[in-house]
Length: 257
Image 1 (tube, rainbow, N blue to C red):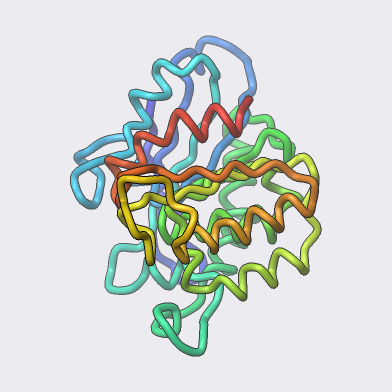
Image 2 (cartoon, rainbow, N blue to C red):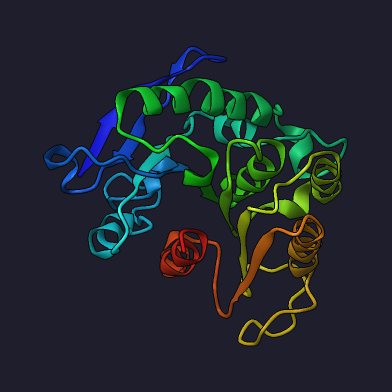
């Protein structure tokens, strides 16, 4: 079942609804569950809530998945450039991210110090690091890489789907160099050939594009920490929920094995 509840984004004093999946038998047992936090929570479960009318299909997936977890989808701001600002961990001097307020750190502080404590307090969770993951796509994917690097004491796993690493590769790699990553960390890194920068043939495996090189650089930092990455190139994949839905079983099985 999915519960929707209001939650205030403290920095702006605005509502950012939470879309919370609870296992079907949640009210019939006293079991506690792992938790996975997702950015763009409105796009996860139902097409009618999704920005572009297509969700990730998480409702149908979790209904049939043999593992029981709690999913907390965190909605972004929808006015103007709110989402891009809230999901920007760095402000670059030039390029795409130079246009937006870098509120990504504030957003993560809000998630770690306000949302997670509330979820652990009001729902039957397994709050420890080993049972806590984070996920997102596009700018939410970038935030997921940032989260598992900067807040690795909180998150042991991350699904970073079509991540916007290309906009701040150097800052992100510096972040990863400055923070210790626990070897007990699993990170899924993906991109589609139809969204890759500099791909030659979108119908073949990509090992040449700048998008590939950015993900590969992140993978190398994870390997250096003796942690476990999974690099996934979706052949023919684009930058859209329909293609991200196809990756859900892949990254969920990898992260929660």
